[in-house]
Length: 177
Image 1 (cartoon, rainbow, N blue to C red):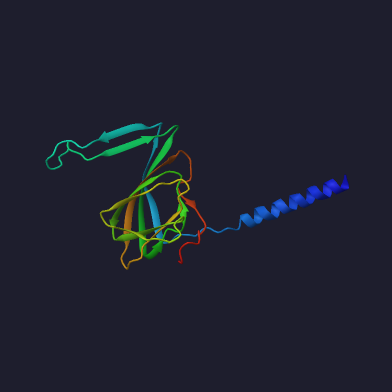
Image 2: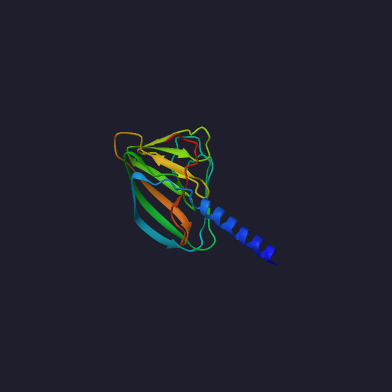
């Protein structure tokens, strides 16, 4: 019996040590970056579907479209955020993810996005007037301002109700910054 208790005690200590060590993984904090919520709205289940296919042969009008498809479906309730984000020169969001996808429009300057699962650390540069999508989920990324000018974006994010909008992540180690 004593041997069994000693073994259980050792196992408990080992689990505690592993848990404490796992808890020491550090997130990469934002620096020179500020985000603020412009608007937040609550939604019930969403089921939207759109499509447009090639029609006509003249210049594109509002009725002549190339293939385009959009589909948004949720079960349960969601929170929709409209975020204003500002990067100072050299600023960074730090490595993070979001539970849902984001549609991001660069409104001033230029930002460079890096993907946590890209072993080559390929920079994706977006300038004012362009947009990009963050797919959310386990997609870890870092968005930086690598210019000498202030950069701003507006992001629209749809996430499950009550979820944390941003999930800090440790540096994946694929980029040298």
